[in-house]
Image (cartoon, rainbow, N blue to C red; front, side, top):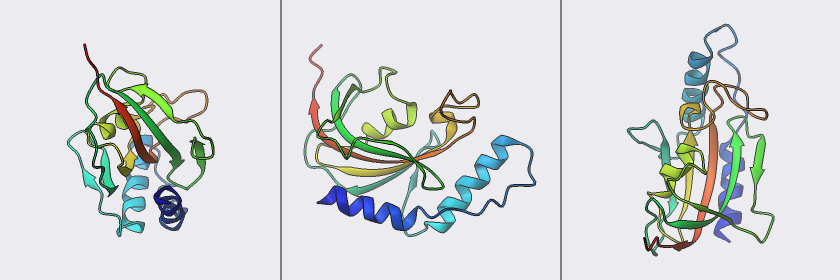
Length: 161
């Protein structure tokens, strides 16, 4: 139920933003303006700016174990561009994403966000490109692309090494 609620909330808040940066040639500056516009349009979400540049919002606090580097997490997530176009999600499947934290298998912003979460928690994060796919992007993601993620941490296995 909380997952459905947050997806509905995300669809309300993640409005397509008008491109006020069309006259700007510097891609990093365009990204900065895109993030600024997104935060302005979604000012009801109380994102906390972390030192890394990650914007973190805890929608629902978890009550279980806190994720730490090298723990294995089981998560449901949705990854959207700031214009609300969906890049990927696993909410429509019964399968969680299972990955170790802090071992380079996830983008840096996603990894960092997991370390703020406890099992049972739901968070919304805005990940600037420097914590995602960076200035080069990849085959699917253009350079300097920030993302918004919804993350539900459903299970955690502590590292025993």
